[in-house]
Length: 264
Image (tube, rainbow, N blue to C red; front, side):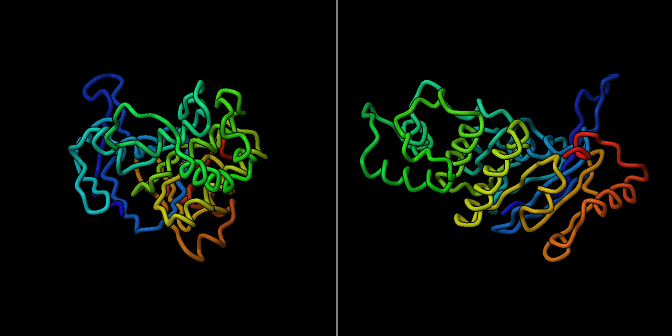
């Protein structure tokens, strides 16, 4: 579903602020893979997701989604293939619109639109069933303004909107980092449930090593623009946080010292 071959990206080349963010990164995801991505600050995690989404062009290499070469396509040309949820819960929804209206916008993304507007009864029935997956009681509040929801509720709604049309690839950029631990757990459980039931292919960045181990069928660790560890299946299930720290130190040749990940 995703095939990345030898992509590299350098920001501000030829200046004193030059930063080599990705170096010859290759990665293949099969249909239905749920891959968690960890690494310290500046490891290249978000740069990798931005490269896939087409936020800016890569310097070299190629990116294909579901067999389609998207390397030269801008982000808006890739949008129909990709669902994305960002760290900030406020960015993915329209605060002044109702829950059902937000879902209707997501449902109509990429379609031709006329002057007619409205949410049909059939759509409301579909949205109610989808909202039940979140286990947050939003199915009984579909006419509530989204701006009245908590950050966790809005992030869960954004997740639902991003997957409503079943994207070829779901990108999750630390989508629970701004939430309290209890709400983050609910959103993560909903994430895994939606990915599993809809058979989605997903990449999820997280700074929480326990979450990275607990969720998904595969884990990759990045450091200074490289993938330094890739584990899946039973080997991933049996991982311990201490083993991840050892793998980092073994591959990077230095002691792991990211406080945010340690505390997580």
